[in-house]
Length: 269
Image (cartoon, rainbow, N blue to C red):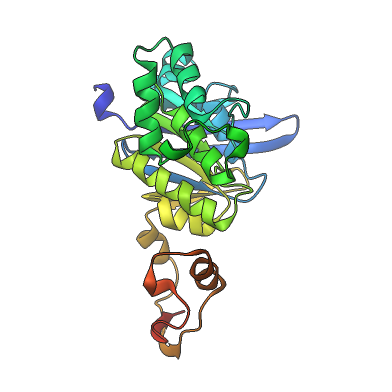
């Protein structure tokens, strides 16, 4: 079987303990190429431990894991060449400008045309206007977008995003969501860990819920919704949500989200 035919990520029977604390107790899942897979769970569920094992930063106690057709334990070098990892905090140099950060990483990876690579990524992540500004002047969302852009230098087929919107304000989260969607549109496989339900709902092609060291459910959003009883439909007056108010005040261009629009709607519960 060729690399292109295998799943981008395959995990079977993964176990990991710290002393007597069992963090992973037999985790199984697969991620299709070019898809966004959300690993959803509360703090301490084991999400980051899985990412660290898949990125060769941590050894599993039992089980197997493969990334881009390479075994994590037996072929760590090939795995590292296939991936990029973005942690919970942006790993950018605040003294440098956005362009300088990108050029630096491209040169460290011994890539030709570092300037061209930087310009292309600045445009792709809507950072061209801020290219020459020091990163210390960037907003949280801009820093995170730059961090993701830096992760894509060298075109890794698989990228791990470990709780990428932690600590960001609502508008910055939306910016990061759009950047993540564009990754998949360009063919990159994304493994996203998050504790935010709406984030998984907005982004993921498939969602797996990790609870007490095990995957308790794995499926599309539609499949997960079928696990609950059929919805009851009621006609009610729709009041604006806090999100509607926030984006109306800060200049959201979506007229449908402004307060007062569409006062009646169908709500399911």
